Image (cartoon, rainbow, N blue to C red; front, side, top):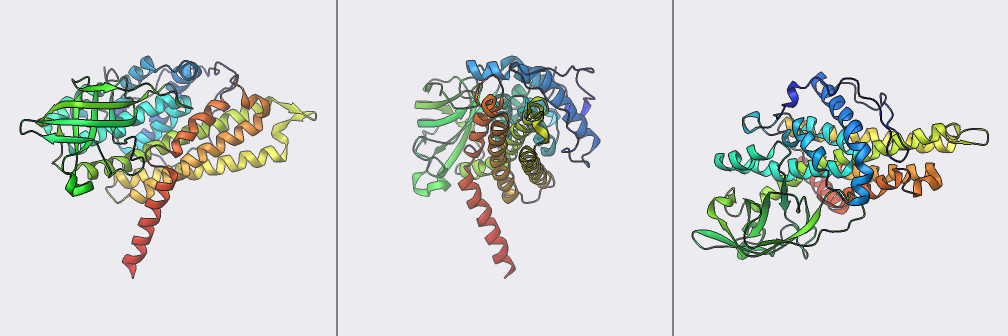
Length: 417
């Protein structure tokens, strides 16, 4: 049964702190938690943290090594209400805000980054546009049936030839009067293999360029849609990534999400939201890297003492902790702005940029602290490093984030002139 997160008062009572399969343990955090969160959000944090430590972390190494989709854990996340955390309760969701979502993303990703990206792509990229732009009938079908964790969705915007140029969609959807015929290929689709529904973007009027892109939502599988090979990735290997290949794929007229030509607007709004989720994922990876580094440094001795007492190690820990806390503040700021219905595009880009680069930095420093042990799979530091790297790429590269930030800053200055 789906449990609204607002009703959860804790998970599992006395959860024993469990070791990673290959050596590292979580440390309780106190100094890095923002002190003024509402009590409900702190309860949510603890619930997600306990779940991650009990259910995700012990299995993360296996998901990574064997490229296994964490099916059982995703269903349990659904039981906790996480697979529809911002969806209104009337459609089977938990009805919580985006700050709650950012907190959940950090704690889940701290346990397993693959589970984190499944959670993010499903909530931000699939449920998000349906919730924001779907008809009542679409919401009833594509939200209500996708909040329990038993079914997930995907989001198909990128193409083999367009990369960061989201407005250059070569996939087409021809209006036949009674349906749309879709042709083209979508690339790098997270949850592409396991998903049972998709939000897809295609050009319906080439003459209008990006204003001629429309969005569609439909069930999978469907005739005319095939999947490309499952990509063998550097990191987040428990999450599937593949191409969606459309060959005269017929979609009913009611598949149109929003009105014709709204696709680019829907995509940009969805990516703004998604960047807050990815910032949360990056935070989780960064915090896990710091936890791993401190735990190892406490027990590793050199020159007759714990290496945690060495100034060079302390400097790395100070830099990691400072960047993580700054990234967390940026992420919370973006989430609160969204929740208060104020502009947040710039802040979401800032949070995603800084948190993702912090994740890569923290994972790098963790490996340095662990030395040779950081370079082997006996410890999770090398997995954190591999998982972190993608956060600087998907849902807008760091270069794109800087363009978004600079464009908004310049616009703000010009408005004052």
